[in-house]
Length: 279
Image (cartoon, rainbow, N blue to C red):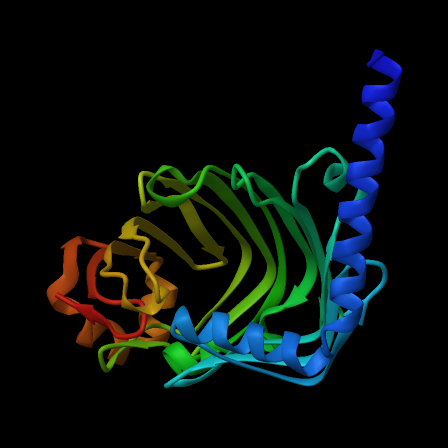
């Protein structure tokens, strides 16, 4: 058999498999696909619900009014979300998934390859007040506009990557850790990076710069499912100026035991993501 015939046979086989996959997706009811999604999230420890769930042309699913929650309450709400298989990589025997959607006025998108776990993700103009995780997990009022970029590679314990975050006009009030209040503040710039390697997330250079206060968060957290059970080993440093100290005397009186040098507080955070504790 000539090379041309081999190529023709290969193209026919791939086209046939693609047709089978297409017809399979078309024949499976949307309700069944939704239940598969619900069960997958349940195995990770989360509840998934959607106001509307259906198929996206040519090979994908789409949903509106999505809520992801755990036993504490809602963690993430998405106005729209779509996940679709890329056709060209599929013809080459590779499974690659495109994801995009919206959160309020913000947008997000990403591409993930299932075989090697590589992927890229970005989010733009996402308002923090549209992400219920902060209220659910910390009972704090957190505002600002988020930009995020992430890269991932590998699977399982070998998974690695990094996430870069930036927030404009951040406002944090009412935040507490194990019942201890943190100072309310407005931050002009918030920037940070989280690196993932060896099953562990490391927070690098995560800083919040306000007019009269500087805050820095660092430390590590093992990655495990569900994520909220991952034990924390973090350090939160507060460096207020005298004017800021004077405005929030009561808060810093309660934080007096964490004063390491004048104007420098270091708070060791342990516990888990769902229940952080001050040591």
